[in-house]
Image (tube, rainbow, N blue to C red):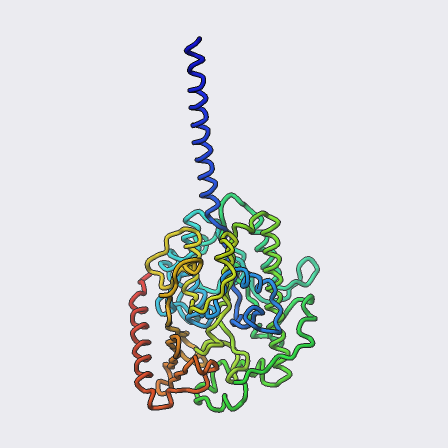
Length: 469
């Protein structure tokens, strides 16, 4: 009996050690689970960088987008490498330039090999529940879509439809689908790609822009300032081939009178404000579902947009209005010291796929041509890129000339495949509106040759990285 009494403390000690070890393993398991954040990637269509209150626009109402930008990481100089939805979205999925993934309007479907290294495929393979809501924007081979997304809710125009006897806007319908996805199975982390059609114009409709009645009162008493370069003299100075592009054709649809300009820009802003309201609803749902503290939100536009500059509408070309987009990352898991930061560095849509994988702790393919923006949390980014190549290679459209550009901290060089005699060179530090074409001055000929060779070199390297299937 005495021996038994002596063994009791030993049994208690062993029980304590075992319990502690079990608890430690449980804590580690919970910690590992918490380390996998939910991710929502929100993409708008045709939202230029300054169609955002946080960017300094004094008229547009975007309080929820502004909150994301102000509370997270905001990138003042975010660009798309190809300013058109099809190619840009392919780049967002694959982390590759158009010259490599070779997808745009007028081209074959996006190759399977690229999609097997896309961020949704790799996240799903890593155990994420993946979803796509809204606009896919790329053409895929049969069967690939199901390997990318557990849930797909693709939506299409018209913007205003009747649902249960009431008129509803497409952005709100996408928001409803997103909320349903968030509220569904919670057994594993999710990545939701929420891709709005807004504020893209309905090109086949005379009115162009459509919004729900609840934003009717917005901007009624505002006067939208006319861009300086909307003066007809800037259009008159363009070479003849640029006067007959799709950019000019759509200018007549939207901006050819002062009255139409005011109406159309206000419609464009109302559609963005509608999306902003949906962003607010989604964030409220995350709070209600207890997911807000572990859900990263990445917000971006798929390309920029001319609003009368140069007598243009649309995108496609290589000027700042066409290339620059809003981009912010809100990560509630980060300490306050790593939040509420604004960066001047040049970031690209190439960087989205590696960023989403990095957030999830998934290995980034070596084939990717972008870099993870997670480095901006707390790492040294002093060696971040200071230059980038841009292109638009759409086939079969004479009104959209193929074009290339190279941009660094000081200069931007632009050339056109169909008009090699015309090139543009701008000093961006002195000429943000890109109106003083230095390429017309012979003293800049060496610089023109330098950037032309840069474009040749980069284009060749990107072409060499294409795959067969």
